[in-house]
Length: 177
Image 1 (cartoon, rainbow, N blue to C red):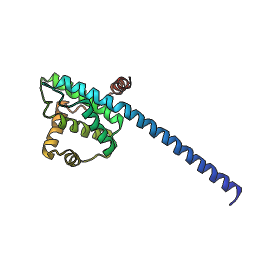
Image 2: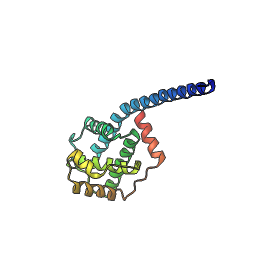
Image 3: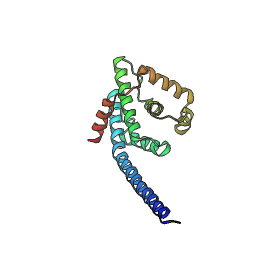
Image 4: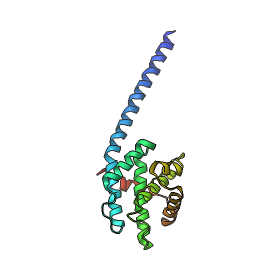
């Protein structure tokens, strides 16, 4: 091996080591952010549900929503940005529900609504998504009810799934503080 080839190999190996270390730092930072923000997203979702659901009696706690989000993070790689989008969609759903004077969200269907919220969020944020049957098997739901609930959710928000950058960064900033 010539000196030139050896020097080149050393540079390449050093670069890859630096990239691995950099990637580790990025991954670790994101992990820490997830650990901090997921409970805050869960608390915000619980607050929204408490204000929106008639006769809400701790049906769902911040801890149970946090467990739900952590489970999704470990099972399907739910990212914190997707959790923030889900929070914004829930806000939109509740706002539209109030504007239409409807009570689609009840303490009996909070779990199904949360699963629909995640499904819709994933469909908005990812190129490849899990099929609804995955969620029915994972959470023990009926596929027909889940599909109908997803369509009802979308109808309630008038199929307005767009999230403005300003809205996203406002809620993200709120959750960071």
